[in-house]
Every structure is written in structure tokens, then in C-alpha cells.
Length: 435
Image (cartoon, rainbow, N blue to C red; front, side, top):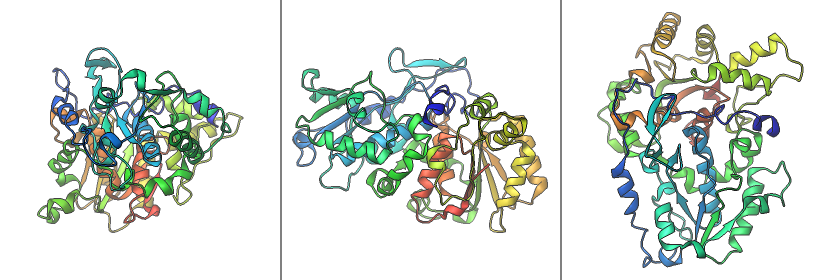
């Protein structure tokens, strides 16, 4: 299965953020997020005089081989696992930008649209991964790549080619087995400065995260600070606050901000993740390559399963895969009615679909059921110019807190939402579904 997954283009599972600019941007340069970069430069742990485990006591792990030129969904999956590896090895995680183009101008283009080549991670998330509070007294806080290179001159950096360690593992090793092997290696290195060589294969690419091999790490990962203290950036949360009317009942607007900000349940909300755009062609690849649901979309506790078709291709098998990957409006309505209950009063559709298509979907859902608090979509959101380029994260914040969620089992964006939902004890796995 891993080999079949590897054959699919890197754009297959890429939640390409250019495809997710839900509101058509006006002709102006994309934001560069300089104030976020500046805050990252001045994190308090960027100080060698700090006491243990920070300062001169800290050891670091810089994954120079992290992915680029793909979307936030894939990037986030790899980032979380790299950060967890650093945590397990008691090293400071060296974070980098969310990277489209590693080098060159700050503005690049995708599909004819200008986009930021590199978005500072603090514009998307907060928490230990981006240098926030680390509750473990033996693990140093995360630092920026810029700081890492300021205290780790290149001659002093131990550069590891991941192939040298990976070849000591079985080809089908699980993520837990990979992490344990790497923890052993990293803890044997005295040097504080360790880098995974840029030209070597990533440890946690989508060839692994798209498979069941990722599931065994979840119990430890979900109880670690990496997920326990994961949150979204102030920019993303502000996008959520700006649009509260679409996500919760007006009676909750006057609650204390910390109550709204916490990852508590959004009562009565059903969120749908509906992919269009590149999926209109990519779903054919999913069928031809007999792909399964993405790794974290395959928890045995989840009610909806998917078995890839056999080696013999048929029209019925192709149609079956399409219904899971690219459901039609009638199929979406049918699934929504199947999982609905009287407690659900509103629907939010996170989607990159065109406005006319979403208008048709809203009409169909409205005709099928009386949603007391209405139906909204990603294109209804009022977002600032900076928020438009991190709009996926706003949607993910809503989806992880929804009372019920229906996602796309092939999608890495859905997979990240499911990972966050499964780590929230308030949410029952039976309320997370797939097309």
C-alpha cells in the first residue's frame, strides 16, 4: 500500500492553500507577516543564560529535510510528528516557516495567483511547537531556525542522513518504531546541534502518514504537550471570533473569551469538509492507485470505513471510490440526513468549491431539513487580508470543535481535524464521519 501511495503526485494529498483562498483575493500583493517573524526572533528562550533545560543546557533537532511545495494539511502532519520526535528525545524542536518555496523571493505564484512563498508558523499555530510553554521540566522549548543557526555554526552541527538509520528498520515499520529508533540515536549524540540532512528523505512524509503505520503513535502523541497544548494562532482565532454568528448560538457570545477560545464543544454545529478543485481529477488517481483513507482517518473507533477496490478495475468500483472522494450534492445531502439528530441546528461547509456550486448545495440542504440556525460556507466568512491566506486553519479550528463532523477520508486536512478531535475527551468518536 505504501508503494501505491508513493506513486501519487505530491499534489494529490496537498491541501494546496492557493486552492483554499475561499474568497477571491483582490489584485494586491499577498501579506508577508513581518510582525509574526519579528516576534519569533524575540522568543524569550533565545537566550543562552537561561536555566535548565533551556539556555546553554538545551539540545536541538533541526529537520532540514521537512517538506515544501505542498499544502498545509501535509505540512502539519509532518510537523507534528517531527515536533513529537524532538520532544521524545528531549531536544528543542527547531521550527521553520510553512514553506511553499524554500528559496527565492518572498512572493511566489500557484495556479496563476500570487501567494506567500513562506508563512511564519506563528501566523498559523501556537503552543509548544512554535516555542510556547513546555510543561515537561526536562524538555527545552522550541526555537526558531534563525536562532538555531546563530548558536550552532555549521562546523559544529551533526548532520544525519536519515537513510543511514532508516535502513536499520523494517520497510513497514510503524511510526512508533521509527520514533523509538531515532530517540535512541539522538540520545546517543552529545552535540547539542543535530540536523536531519536536507537532501535525505523525510521521516514522516505522506507516504507514511497516509497509512495505518501512523496510528500506533497516537496514544503517546495525544497525551504529549505537542497535542495537549496545541492551539491556533491569534490571527486564526481572531478569524473565528469575527465570524462567531456562523458557528454558535447568539446566547454564547457574551461568555468569557477564555471559554470560547478553549477547544470546547460547539453545540449544535455540524461541519462538512467538501473538497472540489484538484480533487475533481485527483480522485481518479485515488481509485487507480487503490488508496485507502489517510492514516488518522482510519481509527478503528470511527464509524465509517472504506475498503479500496481490488486489482480488477470496474465502473462500479470507480463509482464507489468517487462517492467517498468526490460526493455529489445529492450524496452529501443523503449523508447529512443519515448522521443528523435533533440537537443539530446549524451547518458549516468548509470547502474550496465555487460559489455557485456551494449555493446549490445550500439550497439542497435547506430543502432536505429545516436548520434553525442556518447554513454557512467558507465563502461566507469575513476575513482580513492576512487571514485569507491562513483560511484553512480557521476552518480547522471550527471543525475540530464541532459537535458532529463529516470529512473526506482521503484528505490530509480532514486527517488533522480527526487527530485533534480524537485527542479531545469531550468528543465522541461516533460523531466523526466520512463521505
